[in-house]
Image 1 (cartoon, rainbow, N blue to C red):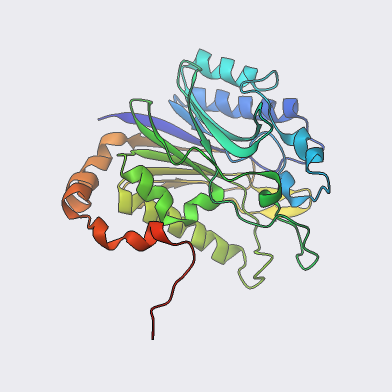
Image 2: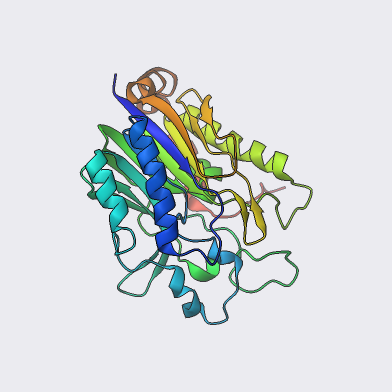
Amino acid sequence: MRNVRTAAAQLGPIQRADSRAEVVQRMLALLQRAKRERCDFLVFPELALTTFFPRWYHEDRRDADQWFETQMPGPATQPLFDAAREAAMGMTFGYAELTPEGEHFNSSVLVERSGEIVGKYRKIHLPGHAEFDPERSFQHLEKRYFLPGDLGFPVFRAMGGLMGMCICNDRRWPETYRVMGLQGVEMITLGFNTPSVNSQNPDEGPQMRMHHHKLSLQAGAYQNSTWVVAVAKAGVEDGHPMVGGSCIVDPNGIIVAESTSEEDELVIADCDLDATRFGKQTIFDFKRHRRIEHYTNITSQVGVVEPAE
């Protein structure tokens, strides 16, 4: 057994007026609770250090740079790394990354028990739009403030296993899980900030949004025989409601633990990485059963191409 006692550290709303220092103190409080629960690994949400700022339009994109981190760890986040190292606890969290070259990404880092960063991921499937849309009840401007990720879907050796990361909208794309599954991934961590209502489809209310959220996690976990740890930023943030739904899904696609609130909360499960082996070796033995000659459409085209009449 390779057990990783994992805590999904859901965060309640982070308001626009909240400082980095205030947010980090909340994260440290969750880390200390996870330490008392003897956790090995702590997973925080997407853009864990700030409010979800892509809901606001800035004509000059540089005005949004206030939400970005230029170094990791930096002065505001160093206490998190110090506390994780002292607790001998691994962690991962999402943040807005501004590179020395001036590029902007929606990123996450994987931190080992030693406090060292051992992996980075940059969000690939960016939703939303790039320009102000007067028809929308609220804006979703990720395409304005972020570039699509350029690191692919890497898998890292950490926490005694094979770990991967993705962010929010990535969970809805089966390719996300499969690319990591083909690298033998045993645990995928996912942070998200998901509105309770789809502004483009008002009929898709919170109940349907939660159904789609869990459906994508459970399918990805089962079809690639991997643990999936999904962690929300939840509650009403600057007047905008977001779903909770933090949960831990086992390699059979079963939700083994989930949140009960939209506030700061720990969702804990013992995750045996060896539990991924049966699915990988028996049900989905990729090496024996995949027929890649029939999958060329997946990488040769972007949109739908209907068959000829």
